[in-house]
Image (spheres, rainbow, N blue to C red):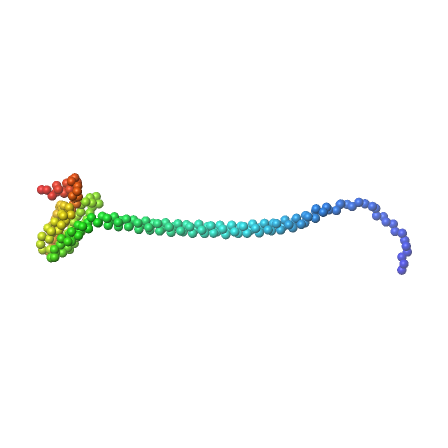
Length: 203
């Protein structure tokens, strides 16, 4: 069917655009938005990684501090043990040095024993306030008093002088006790101990 050629009037009026098109630079806005999101993701990941590393490092530092505290306590314990050992060693050294002057006296007493005599008991005591003075306790299994005289003579040869002697015989044993005062033969000055000993010996 043919449409007849009719005239159609265009009533559209000429008018300008409502808004101009966006400039080209505004096309970068979405790109910058996605780049900023990517930047935030990267920065967050790096921050999270640094936080984890810092937390691990803090734990390691705390563990190291605890280990050092334990080592310090062990060192203190070992030091206290060493100080005790040093103190015991010094006490032993002092005892040995203090007993060295007594060794010749003990050897002289032992060597003065005759073949028929025997030492039942021997004690030597020294007072810390008067180290030059000894208390001798000697118990002999001997029937003769000559053995005691020989022993006292050997003691006197070592520059020891006796005072306050006591002599008793109990069950066949000769029990002798006395105080011994050592006098340095190189010293001519009279000491208070020797003066007291001399005054006690003299009637």
